[in-house]
Length: 437
Ligand code: SF4
Ligand code: SF4
Image (cartoon, rainbow, N blue to C red):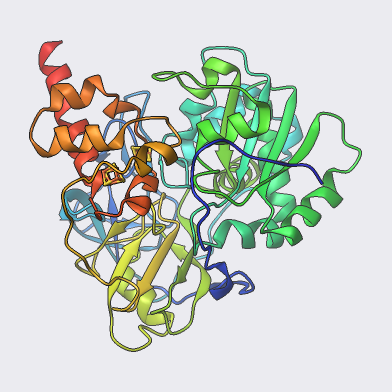
């Protein structure tokens, strides 16, 4: 088997053994869900409901007229108790619809239809109506991504799941193989791409076998095995590895004729097109050395992470840290009432030993971050300029091209929080650019 990859990056211990063999289970509903109206890239939604309203699972409760946005839906039957700012996983407060969950949930009225007859416009409309966004974490609206302004010749399914610990995509590949294939074909049709390619890391041999057995002999469809290297699942690195195409700085995959979607997003596309089902639930991984019972669970959007942790057996021993997402790109949580959104792929529970905190020191100019940065940036310069408030220089050194993969932080012997510095730089640079325009 030929195995491909990209240059730079890092080989990480993957820690998938905690949960990779655990089948997806459903946990009981919480008493309340909190659904942020801005959980995607683009314009926030305005609320379509008010306190006191009764809502049904799948009902649209937030929308925006902007092209780059995504509708939000009630994930449960219940009663709206508030529309107000609530804590969000990034540490800010976001306007949210709070729903008291009905003890008795009705049966959703999804209507099955023949997806083979759907036109490109109908596929895109179904995806837009369902409020689907990239579920790997980027949360970019999928109907926008599947309406590229340039011709596309390859649709790639990002089946790498390169973040350590996370296994939800892996389980979906094994347990929802046919749904994934049909969703991928629908997304491929939406962008009129002649080629469909699955990019899978070699630490998922059972998923490679499951997919290969389904696509064997099918013209225009192939599976590319990829080395287990981080960040193999980042779009630009994936495209380089799979097709040997470079996406230039400041450009997007469609500029080189490619669209990429991850596994969970393709399955959501399938459900939207086949049943008209909105994005109201997702599979995520609850894991880590501090998790009592690591597992992959199907949860409703808006479920508080504290409820999920409790239903998964809580902490094993003393709590060290809780992270929403993967260990490389996720967000540390200081409270457990933040809720699951469309881009939440995991909840990591770490023991105190795993997170041994160390103070960061000055850059010692070892150059390791430069050697490993998959975007060929100089994280040392960018972070130092950001730390000292020279955001103009951080901009000149390419801060905006950083996609916050965390590789530089992982290799830095001075334990510098480079991504935090870069995030601040990007915020300041964007504000300065907006003020100039
Ligand atoms: S500078 Fe950005 S892209 Fe480069 S390694 Fe650091 S986080 Fe990743
Ligand atoms: S890895 Fe850390 S110490 Fe080394 S050059 Fe980069 S920022 Fe400086």
